[in-house]
Image 1 (cartoon, rainbow, N blue to C red):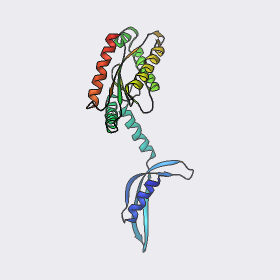
Image 2: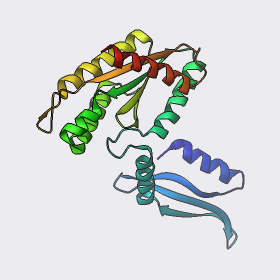
Image 3: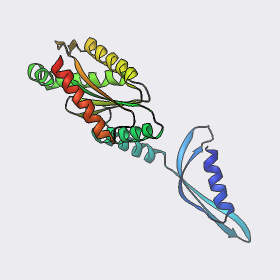
Image 4: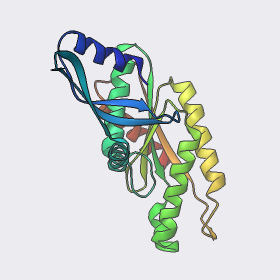
Length: 225
């Protein structure tokens, strides 16, 4: 299916080489795609040069591997990125922002009074609040943004925008969650979230320093009401 893959195979064969276990997508007779491990060797049979090709259907195994990779990168409770995967993506985003001299904003978000919610309504309802918040966060950000769970009731988001635009996104998330979390699992939760925000204009050396600045802003938000 991929013309670039086809060209790579042809170039290797023309140079007298072969292809061993290349992941190649083929098309069935009905037009549906499937992934293969593709091997081609050159040979001479009864004086005739031929190409001997083996095509091993790799679709099911590839799908399983992709699912396992996705599971390893996701927080099991909320389905968003776990801390390790979020930090890897955040480092990549910051490096890109520095390379192109673009602003990058980080949110650190914390569900307010979460221990009280757990103590008053039970851990199952606390989990429902976290899942609701993660869903609200996913719905509030754009496709270019990244949101992850750092641990407990603390979340973070990477937004490739300047401070003014990032504040608008954060405020939209704050108000959306507050409206949605008034009642959870039939209980009057009155949930809310505090958000700390920091923006890098190439002055921040690494993602940890930027998150620390956002965390300090979160602390002020918590204690400032």
